[in-house]
Image 1 (cartoon, rainbow, N blue to C red):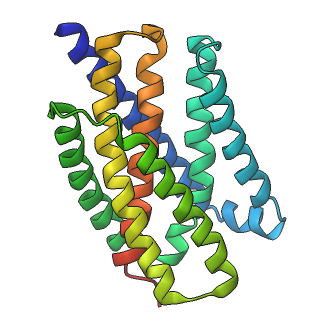
Image 2 (image 1 turned 90 degrees about the vertical axis):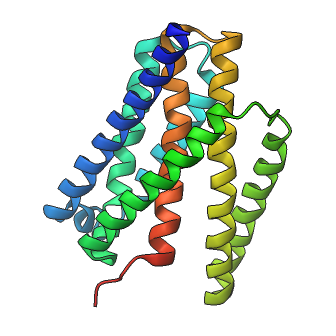
Length: 216
């Protein structure tokens, strides 16, 4: 039980460190107008490519990479993601961002607790949730060309609901992984931290999009 609790606490510690790094980079890019500079130079596309590349490498090569490399990839993603997320400070009021971040944290905490504590078999959720996410992504791309604001709102709600389910599923998976002990224990917590970091970021962004107070 002590090992399991230690794994869970290390997972959330690394998630917190990742979020902290993201927040610091995001605020720096906003306060120094580094984001505007990158946008004007047309290099934001490179940022997106780097993010995707890190996620793909992390997902496909996790078992083969050393704990040090896995940790570096995790923080590279967190820092680069901070550059992308700095854009929210230009769109939404700071008080609204802080308040909805706390709301997102409370919701995420409740979902995490349920996912970790439930004794239900959630293994079947994975395929369903992945299908819904892919469907939501495809519809989002289509709506870029259509530009229907009502449809965009519905997609935000749909994807938010899906990530509620993904969070429950991922925390349940954390409990299953620590019981099975299939992965290298030296980097298992980093793998889990990356999963729940992405869950939280997506929940926060969707809640901000739905309820955030925009700048005049």
